[in-house]
Length: 161
Image (cartoon, rainbow, N blue to C red; front, side, top):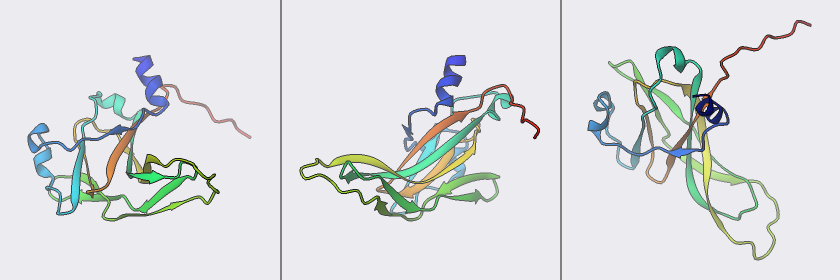
């Protein structure tokens, strides 16, 4: 267990969330299907007991795989919005528009090969809840990735000054 916690503390390697079928989770039927031009991603978190969940957070990261020059740092504009699911008390997340892409302006040496790379756009840190799926709607050309963050079990004492 300690190994898992330490690994999570470093921020798990981004894992691609997979679109799921409606029968995969009992609460998924409450969420609407993706609108035209959008894809619904569903993240089912590993089970934790209620007392354990407060030590974890989930970072949602929306982005695209783009061809880059391999030198400059790129980023995407956009906004990840939290939406209420009326009548259920659940929330879901939506990015209506992703982009435009921006980058730093470092000179690229001639002959530098192009590199395909995941470019992150908006992200959000949300609470961990293993009983309800995390549902994210994004444009068809986007991807949803996530990381699970964890806290150490002991608290630090702040010094008085």
